[in-house]
View (cartoon, helix red, strand yellow):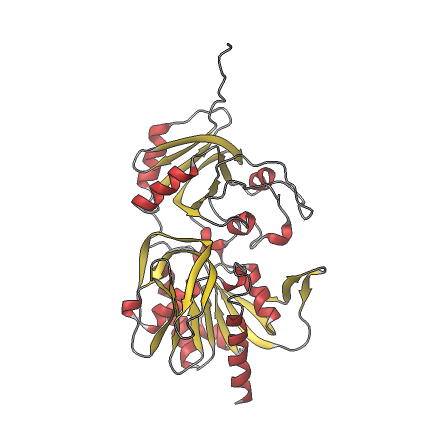
Amino acid sequence: MPARIFPVPTALIALADGSLFYGHGFGAPGETVAELVFNTAMTGYQEIMTDPSYAGQVVTFTFPHVGNVGITPEDDEAAQPVAAGMVVKWDPTEPSNWRATGDLTAWLERGGRIGVGGIDTRRLTRAIRQQGAPHVALAYNPEGKFDIEALVARARGWKGLVGLDLAREVSCTQSYRWNETRWAWPDGYGQRTGDGLRVVAVDYGAKRNILRCLASAGCDVTVLPATATAEDVLALNPDGVFLSNGPGDPAATGEYAVPMIQGILKADLPVFGICLGHQMLALALGARTIKMNHGHHGANHPVQDRETGKVEITSMNHGFAVDSQTLPEGVLETHVSLFDGSNCGIRMADRPVFSVQYHPEASPGPQDSYYLFERFAQAMRARRAA
């Protein structure tokens, strides 16, 4: 019986504790260091890889069939992949979907991102859950040559996301207008026309579909960079202000974001925040944020609205959370995770200022949480009428 020939590993994941995972590389050869997280979603790998909230992170996909529907520019949440890399169980297959315009491997290579296949993702996910999101060095070398000691040292030497402001890196650099609306069969994305509610969206790493949802709710959206001041925002005479999702440590971003938000609150405008925007609002109101063990990353997270009792199936992507024990008087906890009881939403008791930790635009329910955009629009209309 002839001897079995095993392929030479061309990719390596080196954890800071010295654990090594060998696999098959695809995408762009090279090395990167980042935080390792896992995502439990069964669909949406392209949206996940282009979500600016994943800056500084490598994503392990627990669902094994990644790459099977290919790539289409319509699903990008940003112009390029933002996550540092991806880890999957099975190597990507040829795409089989009528919307596909390309394949995952070539797309990752064009975006300069590393992919690793052939990994026992269940074992890796258990390691993440047990020790917290670890620091890792990811390497792809087509010849299978690795300096293991150097890679482990890079993983150990990385400072991590605590104290790291990444919103500046993924934010737009100048303002722009947005009027594209949500995708609808059979025409695809639409265009909002006519006068709308004037919304300033502060971009800490905004996903495109959030902006589409705002436009679909009747908003005329102007996007400003993360470092915009309250004066910059108020100069546009908005009916309301939206605070977007984004990556990194909220306390670090809050150094410049919190003073801006506090200035907006003095103007008595409706405010709506999502993800990092939720954390920024909480900080501006006097609460604190904490680093989670391994975070929430997936499209199947049950969240309860404490005011109605309704349970929403939500999409989440966050490694920091608002500490509900630090919410000041006059700020109510509106939503909680049914997985671990962590905070997922707040609002001011006497004003239309609210935010959620999860992503209502990602449609995991699929429409369980879209009411939040309508609530924001209704608050702005009420202010106009008054």
